[in-house]
Amino acid sequence: MSETGIFATMYSARAMRRFKSDPVPDAIISRILDAAIRAPSAGNSQQWLFIVITDAVQRRQVGDIYRRASAWVRSVYENNPPAADANRPQYERMLKSGFFLHEHMAEAPVLLVPCLRLQHPNLPASLPEEARSAIVREFPWRVGASIYPAVQNIILACRALGLGTVLTTNHMLLEDEMKQVLGLPPDVMTFGLMPIGYPAGKFGPVVRKPIADVAFRDRFPQRWQD
Amino acid sequence: MSETGIFATMYSARAMRRFKSDPVPDAIISRILDAAIRAPSAGNSQQWLFIVITDAVQRRQVGDIYRRASAWVRSVYENNPPAADANRPQYERMLKSGFFLHEHMAEAPVLLVPCLRLQHPNLPASLPEEARSAIVREFPWRVGASIYPAVQNIILACRALGLGTVLTTNHMLLEDEMKQVLGLPPDVMTFGLMPIGYPAGKFGPVVRKPIADVAFRDRFPQRWQD
Image 1 (cartoon, rainbow over the protein chains, first blue to last red):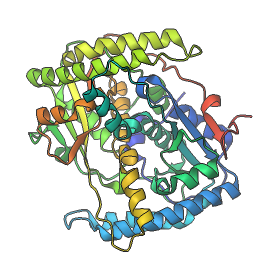
Image 2 (image 1 turned 45 degrees about the vertical axis):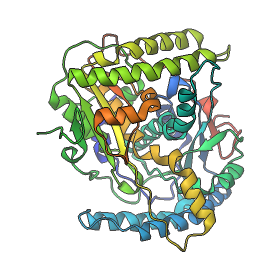
Image 3 (image 1 turned 180 degrees about the horizontal axis):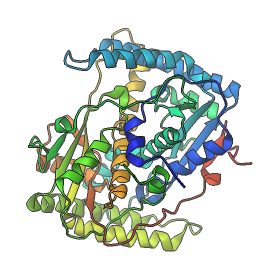
């Protein structure tokens, strides 16, 4: 079967925040989910859950949470202007597009919420105190390793299937409300809110800092490309 | 240019933990890095750094940290046997392969360490206390959203280029040592350690729980497929 190439997909999976109202067929969503679960997770634990919201009432409730959390985030963005050397026009466009989504999340035909069941392991009595405290301290920082790779598979599968999406996390500021609306058990945590739909805009190249600025050889700050 | 298809790549990007000693050309590593940076990050902030270790002495130092941290993790795994209904033979194979890597990380020709510069935003005085505490509390949980999508692009790019890799995080238990060896500034944190090389084993289908077990419609626990 002919498929979109892997690199072409990555290079053009631009964040999409405006969608047509056309519904997305269930079979297409299932293909996206089937891509999500191919991602790795710690110890192949697969403690993920994916909530796919198509019901309009439920979308409005989630959209309302996102709008209120985003008002807080918006004030943070406005209080932290980027450095003068940043790509300012691109940044302004992204902010404007983000602010639009703050108000219109519920209008996307599909909202996908990637979640994880958090498993705090039983630590053996033999473990040194140094290890015990490191494991507890580091848990929140690395837990995303078991869900955000799946999120990237969702982003790429959407692009390959002609759908737009974007990873947002603002609603996590109102996590308790979100969990109540989604009926999630106490040990399940949400890690994103992804609107999915046929894009109102066009796909195009993603624009990023070059690898010369971010890649290092053997030891910081020795440049990879020298 | 003809490329591996996006779905075929995702479906066969099995974790690889045994590598041939053949070096990986710099140009190939640059293609992998060029895939990494196409991933999204919060507000397109791109605060990532990628340390590519090919020097043998440096690989041995990192491999030693990984081995010591992994000894702790190994004892946690041994103290948390999976439920009887898990795919036990697959799990045993994964553990055995993982334990092999604990001892042999330094032998991979390339070690890639994805990092993030952590930016704690200035919070405006106008922000309600509720928002302020939520932003601080939730920061570690969602920060992976700005690096693990790039990690998945690395995994997929490796697969497409015939290279094996696997995302590991055990070394984060000895983060301070790791940062010292890599010469990282205080505000930069490591989020993974990925051995990369031409695989000793074969690529093959990734085996996962079906989406029927993990996908829900509108609200937990209503199944997506019913």
